[in-house]
Amino acid sequence: DVVMTQSPLSLPVTLGQPASISCSSSQSLVSSDGNTYLNWFQQRPGQSPRRLIYKVSNRESGVPDRFSGSGSGTDFTLKISRVEPEDVGVYYCMQGTHWPPLTFGGGTKVEIK
Amino acid sequence: EVQLVESGGGLVQPGGSLRLSCAASGFTFSTYSMNWVRQAPGKGLEWVSYITNGGSTTYYADSVKGRFTISRDNAKSSLYLQMNSLRDEDTAVYYCTRDRIMGQWGQGTLVTVSS
Image (tube, rainbow over all chains, first blue to last red; front, side, top):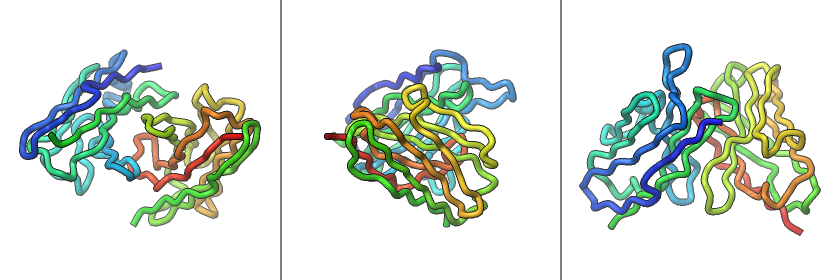
């Protein structure tokens, strides 16, 4: 199974400042079809998760452009250019290349300093 | 508007059974694969099971294989999870999600396994 490792576990940030979350996979996520199935999800307190980014860098409709995804192979990053209060929550990466099983990272909790 | 609404959760004793349902609307259900994903209290996300759009192919996490069965009724736009031989560690909020890359999530239904 592909193991997804996120860092940091917790990320205190100042409003208006940037934030960056890392996700690494135990093997390359490049699929035989040429795509890289790495997604990012946001889970606000008390809510269901929602997909922010799919296939590394594609923003979901309605997601603010302060969110961006990048990376390749085994190393990926979610960046928030300027953190807003509504960005508080837990962020998860997930791989859909080598499955089953579909596997998630352990999560990164973003909180305001 | 796409909606996924889970139901069927509740309190069940260890060794018991429960059947979860997910009612889909706002999209052509029969053209999408579906998943169940769970989240234990205070923990992260764990994929549970997957079913193709026609229902012919299913996959399960090792932790539930042989105990859980995923199914769907495309005529009713509904997804199901039959859970048997439930254990304490199955306690979680269960979400249904649309397609392999989980573009849509329901609000979840809480399953508590406890004596």
